[in-house]
Each structure stands twice: as structure tokens, then as C-alpha cells.
Image (tube, rainbow, N blue to C red):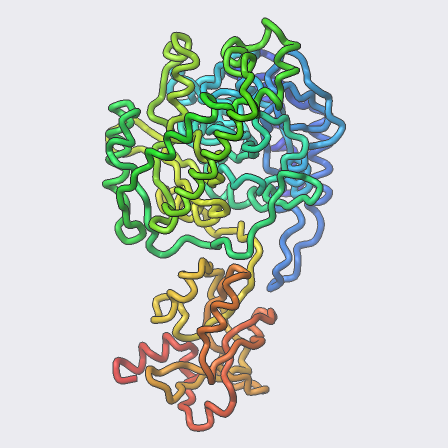
Length: 585
């Protein structure tokens, strides 16, 4: 497809969406939408940058427009230049002249914003019904709620209207709507995504989230979202010791039966089926007591922490008066906790974070039901606050305790579709994505493209996948990037060690063989020193030139050690040599 054909295809896709919006036939998904002229201008700007030349093969330079042609929906509490920001209030809160920082980053990478999506007013709610612009419903069952507060964004993705959508999450708004609409919801660690240009709900516990239908799209979008911005007081840099991959066999914590008593019978049975179906080759499961976490969850609305919301939008809520959503007025409008109450609850959170640290020593992640069940619109109408509180049972504590989460849809046997969420410590985001892809291999990405800051190391022997020392890499949170091969100047020797080890040496001239096979791994920066300490003479780390032209850090051998060693270069790699040599080597 030519660039002109691609542009016209995207324009036709937009025109269909815009017509439905103008006709009022969009299921309450949108609050506002670009007009055709504005959309074309954004598309032309994206196309112009997309024509920049591809980087040279073999370099680590990414394409300048990794999201070229991606259609994006944005929750209406996130600023988009040229569209009003309402936070689902009857009139705009502001008419931004600039994009929110996260939108700016996505647009710079080629994503094109279609419009602003419906939501629970002031991002307060998990139901998706608290909006003067109507209530979107679940794409799979129109009698059931879409979930909130990021209702429109989730439905826009699930219905195939856009490729990806931004939501926000304070209590579970980037996860519950994902569960109710059968899509992926990525809730990053607090501070990983810049919040400049986002209307706050509870500023200490807000984050921008991502909805997609598959992990390929998530892997493309997340690197453009996760940016450290030094002028943003909420922003946090990716730490040097955060894992870059899940372990080969991950330890999952499964709530004890008594922790699941809030669940509806149907969703409880589906969750039990999902636990039973876990792949024993990649997961081990152990029961853990999460009662302390569930108690923490209740603080978000039932304790003094509701002052966060009163601070964030209390004046706007007061100005709306009787036109504000009655449930939100009831929850936030009357909030007047004392400073002592607030400090008490903050200290309770500190104790909860310490309790969670002990939990992370036992498990790599928690596997939880995203919600305890899927209520109907009638259920919510009959008890709007009670149902909303129930929906946050397994989500409310996550941001309070500084955790990351990824929600995935799951259908187990003949049970109803349900949502599962993987929860981990702060900055376990990359690890959780890996585990989520194991739960839904049919949605798995072809290659992980979101790999935060790392150091690359090429290995050629006992650290290769399946070899005895590979655990030294995986245990440090390292990630396999790709198979590699050296140039034809390198020789491979079987060293006179017990057990046998390989040595790679640059001979300085062509050997007559195609090069030595190895693997390129990404290590968390803080793990490099630990890895170095385990390397014994005559091996060392030095520069290796690959047949792609890249120069990388890799295992080399002191020349003195190969004087009496066996030259096995013709094997092409250590694994090939071992296979050919057999058990006697």
C-alpha cells in the first residue's frame, strides 16, 4: 500500500466514525471528536514525518514514527490541543492550546487522535454510568455496564473504532473497563507516565493507562508513553535495578478462598478454572493471604484519603451544584476529614507497603480477579455507590500501595468471560507484561519492543539459553534480545577447564568460517556489577563485533588460555559443538 492509499484508508475510517458521531449513533462513546479538516491536518503531519528514511540495518536506532497510522482515542480528562477538556462535566473545564505530555509523545511518534471519550465524571467511579453524556455499555452484553471511569476509551478499543486508547486509573479505571469489554488494560507504575495536562482525580494516586486489543500494539505504544519529565512533580525515572523480563518459571500468589468471598458465583468459578489451567511449565502457584490489601482498598473512599479528590476537583464540583453527578456529590462533596485522620490513613498505607514488600519476597506477582463480577445497568441504578465499592474490591489498593498491574481478558471453558489482573511491585511493569502474554498466548506480541534502560551483553557459552549458567542472567531480571553471530574473525576454543568452557578470541583475520553463534541479552544497569563478579579468569567482558556490524559488550577470552586449547571454530557455536561432541566432550 502506498502512502497515499494508506492516508485515504485512514481518512475513510475516520469519516465513518465522524458520521456516526454526528448522527448520535456512537453508543455514548465520544464526548467530542476532531472535524475532518483537523484530522487530515494531523494525518498529513504524521505522514510527512513517516517519510523520513529508515535507519541503517543493524543499528539500534528506532524508526522515527513507530506509531505511524495508529488511531488513538483519549479519555476526556487528558488534554488534546484543539478539543475541549470536560472530565465529563456539562461544560468544558478548559480549552487546551497544548497536548498533555503523554499525548504529545504519542503524536510525535505518529499516533493520530480521533477524539475525546466518555467517562465517569471527574474520573470518580468504576461503573461508567456517571456522565451527562450518557452511559456506554459492555460490547459483549448491552444489559451490563462498560465499567469506568475510562468507559468510552475501553469501548472504543473493544469495538474496533480505534487501535489504542488512553484512560486513567486511580482506583481501577484502567482495569475494570478492560475486563468488562474483553481487552488488555495496562496500568503503569505511578510516575512512569507523565501527568502534565491531565485533570487530577486523586493526584497522589493517578496514572495514565493504555487499552489495546493485543500485545503487539501495547508493546509499540508503551515506549512512547513511559517518559521521565523533570518538570513533572509526579514523574519517576525507571530504576536501574528493575527487572527487564519475567523469570522462566514465575511464582504467582493466588488469594486464599476466604479472600474471594466477595465474588459472584459465576466469576468465582471462572477464576478457579483459570488458576487450574495455569501452565505448570511457566508458572508455580501458591496461596497467599491478601486480607491486609483488601482492608487497605477500603481507605480510598471510606477513609480520609477522599480528601485527595476534594482537593483535586472540589471547587469545580461545588460550582456544578445540583448538575454534578449525585453519587460523586455524595462521596466527595461532603468530605471534610481532619489532618489527623489523613495522617492516620497515610501511616496505615506505609504499613501496608511494608507488608507488601514481604509478599514480594515470596511471589513475583499476584494473580487476581479484575473485578468480583459484572453488574447490569439495573444493578448500578438500584445501588450506585454500593455496586461501585464492590467493583473496587481487587483494584483499589494497587495505586495506594505503589504497585503496577496488567489486566487481561480470559474465557475459561464454558464459564462467562472474565478479567484477570497481574499485580506486582512498583516498576515490575515489563515483568507483568511478559506474564500477561503467557496467560493469553493468542494475543502475544511477535517481539517485545518496550525494553527500558539496559546494558547489552553477548554470551557464547554456559550462559546461553538452556545452558548451566543461564540462571545467572534470568535471576538478575535480564532479557534475551536476539540470537547473534560474530564476524568471521573470531575463533572458538574448548578451554582446558572442568567443566569445559568455551573461549572466544578475535584472530584479527578471516577464519574461513562464518562466525560464532551466541545470544544478545539486556541486563538491568544495576545488575551488571553483580554479573561481572561471577566471571572467572580466563574469561572477561570485552568488545565483540557482530556480523551485523554492531559492536557490543560480550564474553572474550585471554589469549594465553587458548595456547593449548582445542580449536572448535568449525562447529560454529558452543551448543553445536556440545551436540556433536556428545557426553564425553
